[in-house]
Picture 1 (cartoon, one colour):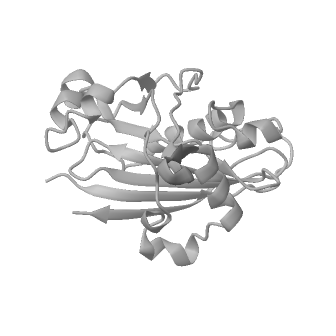
Picture 2: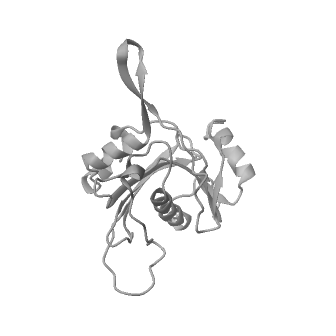
Picture 3: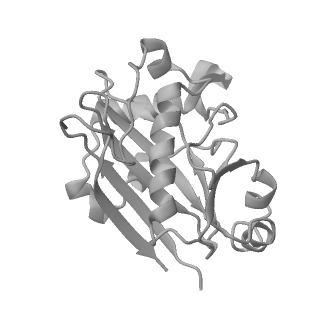
Length: 224
């Protein structure tokens, strides 16, 4: 029986002296106000944060939705649906995984599109975007259109179809765009993990100090 898990990793930056940055660290250029508020595109910083997450998942033994070991697939298109506050992070992680109001609000704003509905009420629809500009730094990370797999829903979010196309892959994720704090030094990056019976969810919080990012904490919640 397949397992769903909730994966939450906190990435906290630390000051380092000279030398080469470790694999879990990346330099980043300043995030512009336009990037932070964009609901129609991804930024270079978005892609850097995503790269950190994917490289970590490649070596994380708890992420093995498809039972392979040599690669991981990033869905070309974003989730195309909302992520509600009550669903993330899982309850048992909340005491040690606080998400500030401004971080969550920016995440929601960057992944939704306000629209008018009858009676002049305003509703929010999921934003649609893709990761076509993302170039992973590890060749084992594959960016692929998996819509036909995910929506096949053979009881395992397209598990058998995915396994036949990517037999050596650990699984795939469908990533939302990150949300940022007002000073752009903290970021929230949630994503769907698949294939699985229920579809897992994972996330990272990243903190920036002198343009470097480092994984400091990992929380894994398995659901059967």
